[in-house]
Length: 472
Image (cartoon, rainbow, N blue to C red):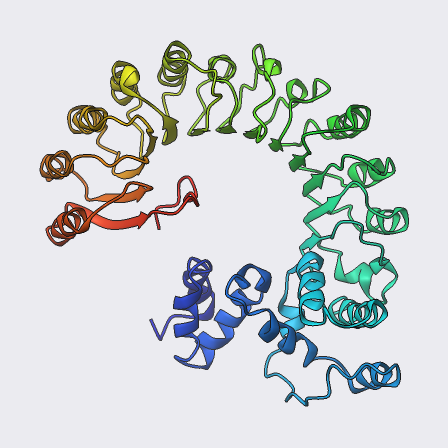
């Protein structure tokens, strides 16, 4: 591996970009490895801030500040950088591709929370002017709520954002900032837009209509929304309907925007408040849909949506179904899947004892199924007996990735029987979530890891759900 060229090494290490600990270990192997891994880590350094490393990151950023800028701050009585840091070996600032102003604001306010507002403001201005320069090329930009600093006026901003692909912002954005962004966002391909309850800026339409080709849209709203404003936003997005291929929304649309997205490949629906009927899905036809993800959306309307697709669905996530759903609607949904999704590869589904027969048909008909996430909160151990029996007898040959989610454990003997009957199949990747396992369960699984029945195993008792189809 030491003799591989840089391009190949980069591709290898890029696959480990979410495994920070392994990347850190590889940093010290040699100079070439170090240079490649630093490129990966600093592409989006904000994603690694979950370990209380804010101050360390801030120190690295401020070590790039020029002597002139430090002198200007000192002249204003701001001596926060009196400690001398050696000039860093890498130009970390210009390695960044993600500019997360939300995180920068948070870090500065966390470190200097006892300082006056004017001091914090001056520090932010210095950092913004440091990060935004003609040598940087950001592809992702995150704008904080009520952000009012006109970053487009910073020298070099035009070149800095000339390759911008992604923007996250809020509809209460300052008009001057909005106008400046609109002048730099013609290359934007993905937009995450958070709709406010009040104080929405209708000039946001200018920003939405600027990109030449907008492919991905994330439309986030609060429980109480300004419907007329949402209608304005949706109508402006409809102008991109021929290009939009990925659409995520957290409320039932005000307009017919969904029916206009004829080339849609990915649809995500998330009704976190569980208050909407989503009847707009009943007669909706999305012929090229490949990925469907939903949370707290009624099963009947999802079944109708799936019935109106054309057989291209490969990934389906149906999580936290509506509490009014009954066994009849659950069964209809499963039937819709196995009758209309012949090339289905990954599925997350809530099931119970009365869905077993339909699940049998699904396993028989969906022969390309590769990964299966079963969510079952029925407090009856016999349900898991039946689920394991189904998988033993009817699982397609491609299926070897499993996640089982339940707040009630299965019987140890049932799990053992499941493993024993899997011995002539491909080694499984297994994740268990929420089940309360004792040492006997872990010892059993360790035994089957050693004999190759289980390739890898992950267990998590917390309320934080794994990424749906992440088996790493």
